[in-house]
Length: 401
Image (cartoon, rainbow, N blue to C red; front, side, top):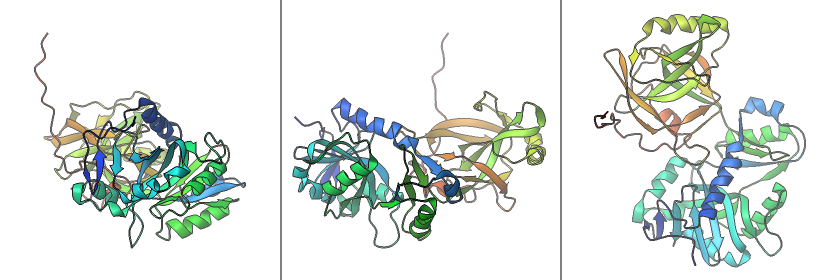
């Protein structure tokens, strides 16, 4: 009996796609979600200049970070499908699936490969935005451009070895053996290195050379690092908290981007604002611009942010940005409108979170508009759905006592 549910499928090229509940076996979906939550979410983000101090000499495996989405290839008996952690399923006459179906006899038991689903391009590197277009193409989708780079195996194996295999090197060897000769489906390109200097060399070649989005370094003791170029975003300050021991200093700020409908979407908070002098300077810039808000937002230690007029533009630098949480669900953040010196909460819509944000400088050369504050500043690094959706306040029925 199949563990895959294709009853509510739609066309994807000559294949099929099921948006939700494509896996009818709860234990399989739990395994996928568990992998994302315990393994992928545990990856540590690094910048290039942090590699020397965080990586130590010893055997490491380095591979290019492909700009796609985390998906899982499931091979059981004569069935080969792709699934994400939300149970979205791709099946049927898809070239990359057909390729694996021809070698399905190599796999023993229910085999699950974790990897990056991407769109292959003739020029430049893959982009996650291209994948979104391909998966949304319906019957006309260019499924022949889809590729899958496997970087781990969760269950199953072949006649020589099966999971569990604690050593990543053994798992890598197993994947290479299973996918040997593949064109659209391959084991991710991996090099064995022994020093931070070698890792930096591959970053310069693959990432700065325009061949990959970033670098993945698997070190000893299960430590995995994602190394990407730093991300800079121009945003506007919409609120702040003050230091408890010195009210003349800003403790943290919240910043926002603008959507195409001229509403503001919360991006997040930033507490790395420099020294005491810098924090006092910022307080002088924003303290006199306090306004009312019908929405409350609190910091990690419980302090309530004071909202201000959207006037002060800043540049924020981050290590990485992600649009999904550890369970694979979209990160949603509040969208607000600013009218008559008051902030009004509308609704939460998909957005993203910046890892380790740091204040860089004020951007007096920028203005508060949908161009300088455009949300597309971060969509090049991660996929955010519904960016063109008009934000509207929820209409709730009158409460009864």
